[in-house]
Amino acid sequence: MNRRVFLSFVTLVGLTLVVLGCGVSCKTSTVSKTPTVDRIQQRGTVLVGTTGDYRPLSYKEPETGVYWGFCLDVAGEIAKAMDVTVSYVPTSWPTLTADVLAHPQTFDFAICGITITDTRLETMDMSEGYLGNGKTILCRKEEAEKYTCLEDLNRPEVRVMVNPGGLNEKFARANLPQCTLIVFDKNEEIPAQVAEGNADIMITEITEAPWYVQTDTRLAAPLLDKPFTRGQIGVLMRKGQEDLLEVVNTTIRQMKADGSLKALHEKYGLQYAY
Image 1: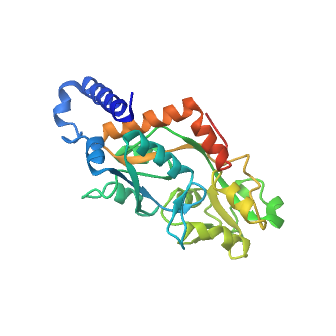
Image 2: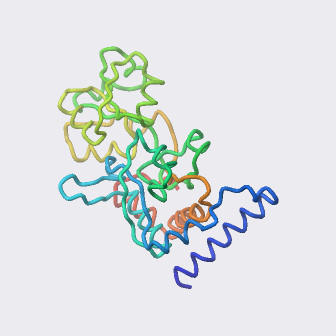
Image 3: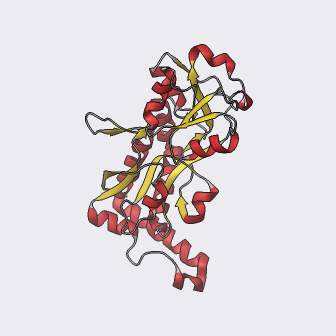
């Protein structure tokens, strides 16, 4: 069975389940009269929103403009399932929700290490998880023994740096009210800011911290095995794209089943949680 026939079958099954599940109320469904997957295939490319600032999940090389990362490899597999190419559309953490919900639509889905949360699910759709995640810290290696728990960070003398508008800032404001909080625009530059002494702590994720520890010997992630939170990362999109959501979920399930998702974790040094 070729990809396009398989995809048509998956889309038909997904839409049939939607219709059976909502019955008469489907007259007011948000499903587009032109299924999203059909429009993507007619276009020949899937538009993927990504921040390009989150190594090793989504990064845009400043000199070449080339995108790479774990999440973008997953996006590539989703594109293959639809027999289309990928075109990346820049977004940012402060504008992510607005960009997903924008009219006219700027991209088909967003992928860049986005945590699945109830708040996001109230207004948008998210796929099944494809990467486990959790909040942790980066600090200078020589100070690693100072930080053993959240309380050690929640002090006025501890300068905590976060990127604006995302869950890192939200976490810091909610859990570290006594620290000296510094909001720094460029997420990818915060590890260097910590290493150079311009901040003491970076609030980050267990997916991101190992990359910076491996690439900058001045840094440490002393609480990597004891994250403050636990969660899942998924693909984010506007509601009303049930056929696309089904393709995304089917691709993720297939990657889990055939071992390719685990292989991607190993490629980027990420812990496999499935």
